[in-house]
Length: 484
Image 1: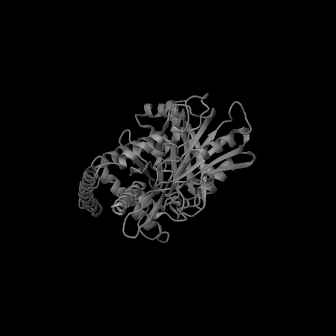
Image 2: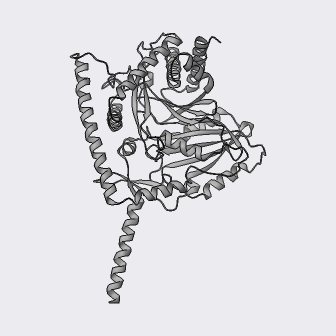
Image 3: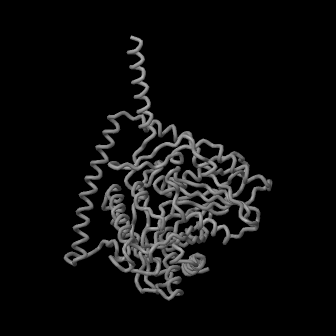
């Protein structure tokens, strides 16, 4: 009897182990898995941010070292404690890592003092180049000191399969303070309330899981029907049998921005005052994003002319649009791509903004024809095709899917601090699309709109010049719109 009882207990313990393993394993969403499947050494799929802080008032020489030690001592929550596991006959899963090597993930970097902006951006460019180690959770934090003026910086790098821009920024903001006198230290990977929420999520019963799976299957079936009809419509438009009103992917002009993506990176930054950008948008009956696209478009035409590679066609911006519902902070990617034809080559600043406004409205109108699932599935298809086309010899295959990827990630309207150190700038750093050598991502920080630009160095080695063109183009648009 005792032996039987012992056997029953052993079976129960084994079942508990299996349940615990299931709780520690989570299947990746399809788009997140695609980011892992398609990345190469030349084109990694991680994203990041460069946060630059002014020195704290107390000017303690051990201030940065103390932050590093506090960061390393913190408990690590999802998605920062997960690594990808690949399987032969099924989708990859996330495996929870019980003891993260925080010496590896939190890196203390001391640049030769006084390190200027060029030295800081050079370090970030080199840190942004290599793939993340898949044997580890897919993230790194570089705490950088030695900056001129006594400030410091934080460069964060995390795989796109773990977070998208919005969920990443939400975690960043949660780790900072609105109160300059608050000396506590928080980190994006230390979120006990999120762990509690996730444990509740995994404890759902089988009926709830089956209901969700059935709903997801229904949504994808509907999306498939919508995309099939869209494919027929686009084919008829392409052959001229019906009047075309939709933008056709892979219709962008081939420019110097569409050279093959290589491993080395160049990083550029720029900033615009939010209130002035909003004034221009309001005066011109446009949105802030349309003003930004117009400014980037003008800067790119200027850059291409200066380098003798102007082409005469309208450039196409790929613009991610979030599909998140309000309050959704899950650590995954929920977005689709819109394709916006921008202004003509020699348009005036106001005419260019008007052209971008109309093209943006058209792209949004087209997006409203589809469900969120259909939009996401379409974007996955285009990304996959772009990856395949990007691996063909240059000039072989269709035209590029776009010329530049431009993303605006919502930030904070308030000034933020880390242990009393004022956040001076927050430059987002993203990944590159195949065959598209430039990514421009924006993030609001108080009254600053900070631009983080990532490029393939072989195509755009002098990205700082492009950054200056963006600021100059905005000045020209503001003068034309506001008269000062």
